[in-house]
Image (cartoon, rainbow, N blue to C red):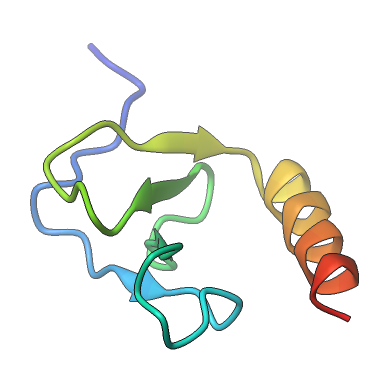
Length: 68
């Protein structure tokens, strides 16, 4: 039995920090609560990074600080 979530039907959302240029797009699947999948939108069939909710919150806070 695997603890890895099945991402075949995940609903991916583009990060609001990705901007409109399309070159640096990060997507995440908010419907997964215990591990948050994150991927590069340019490579949707590529690997996804799985973050804990705490790690995801830290990452988002860091991105928000960098955007200003």
